[in-house]
Length: 216
Image (cartoon, rainbow, N blue to C red; front, side, top):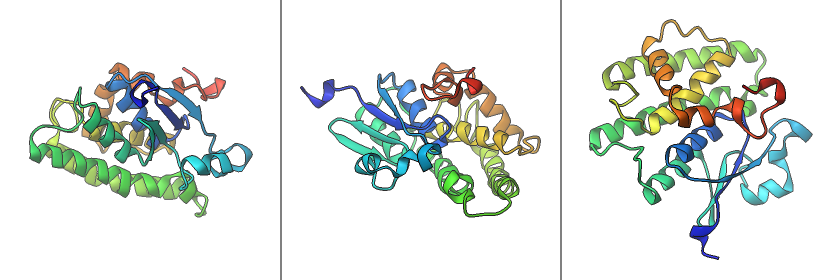
């Protein structure tokens, strides 16, 4: 069977913000796929199993099996989807706006999220305070950037890769009880994005592995 006819498989964890980014991209582009849940807490972390290490030696989600290859790292996956399935586009045509979309994505993916993810929080003492501090520092900068780039969404009025990164990070901020009042631009964009179906169906509360008490 042609690899183009094989449904992609997403290795995901419902609460993983990295996985959520990819789920949004797949939903926006209308790509049907199967999910293989990887519970990051059960059995000491299923990402550390021999079976999953064969999928992703980095022992992280997400991983996407697609077109006969396996990709990891959310932005690499999203950019592959963009290059192979370009409609609707997730990177603006204008080169300056495209660079801004990548900048904001990296700001979140490299500058905020890793400092409050599960692996890092295991290494620090005051987990809540640490997460709040790092998210707050990142959001202060992000709010300032978005005041110059945003329209309805992060980059003007079209959904971009930056938006796929923003919404899961705001969700994390809410989980860690970060006060979002100082960030009206972030809050406004997040609210607008959550009105879109692709962001709703990909939400952590609506995944196959979402615990019953967290479903909505």
